[in-house]
Amino acid sequence: MKPGGTLERSPESAALSQKTQALLNNINGVLVGQQRAAHLAVVTLLAGGHLIIEDVPGVGKTLLAKSLAQSISGQFKRIQCTPDLLPSDVSGVSVFEQREGQFRFMPGPIFTNILLTDEINRATPRTQSSLLEAMEERQVTTDGTTRKLPDLFFVMATQNPIEQQGTFPLPEAQLDRFTVALSLGYPSAAEEADILSKTLKEDTFTATPVLSVDDVLAARVNARKVFVHEAIVHYIIEIANATRQHPSVVLGVSPRGSQLLLRAAQACAFVGGRNFVTPDDIKQLAPYVLGHRILPKVKAKRISHEDIINNILAALPAPG
Image (cartoon, rainbow, N blue to C red; front, side, top):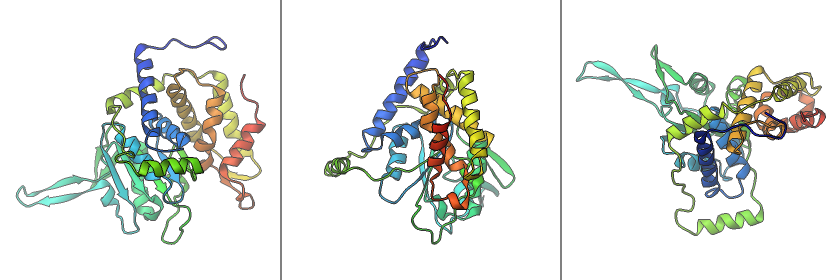
C-alpha cells in the first residue's frame, strides 16, 4: 500500500461494509446518544468477540443488546443472572424420556446467535465459569458430550457497579474473554428530551432486521482480510509492553489482549469502509479493549483503567 493510498476492495467486501453501516445506523435509530457504544458493539460483533457493559440501571444496556439482536435475523435469548442460577440453566440438561427409554438433551439458552447475560455478576462463580468454554471454544460440554454452538455466537453481558451485596465480581480469566468493556453514561439534556419524545410514540424502540446471520459471518471473514501494516503491529506491541512496565500497574496486558486489539482494529476499519488499519483505529479502541485487562496497584485505583491506557497512548509516538 502506498502512503495515503488505499488497497483494492472486492465488490463483495464493499457491499458487506455498506451493510454493516446499515446495521450501525439501524441501532442508532433506536438508541439515543449512544453512537460510541453502538459502534463498539458492531465492531466487537465483527471481530468475533464478546462485549460487557458496566453501568447503572436504566441507561440502555439491555436496549442496546436487543436492538443489535433485532437488526440481525438470528436467534436472540436472554439470561437473567441470579445467585440461584445453575450452570445447567445456561448450558442445558439431559431429561429422561420414559417412552423412548433414554435421555434426551434439552439445550439451554446458550444455544443461540446473540445471548444477553443480564447482571452477570449476580451469578455464582460456578455459573460464570460455565460461560468460559462457550465464549472461547464456541462449544459446550455436558455429561461428557461436547456440543458445538452456532457459528454466530455473540455474548453481551451487563453488570451493575453500584450494588455489591449478593454479587460475585468476575475473575480476571472471565473478564479476559470479553473483547470490549464499556459503560454508557447518562444522556445529555437534549438527548433525554429526545428519549422522552420517542417514548410517547409506538414501536420507536424496536429495530427491524437489516442483516442475516450469513451476512455477519461473511463480514467477519472479510474484516480479517483488512491490511495491517508492520508499523501498526509494532505499535500494538509497544502499547502492551508499556502496560506491563507502567508504575501504576501490577498486571499488564496479555498477548491475548494484543490479538483482540488487532482483530478489533480490523473490524473498525471494515465498518469505516477501509481495508487498512490506521493508528487512529488503535487509539480509539485501546481503552475499551485493554482497559479491563490491566490490574492497577491499590494506591492507583483512583485512576480509571481507561485513563492509564490513555496516558500510555499519549506518551507513545504513533506510526506516521
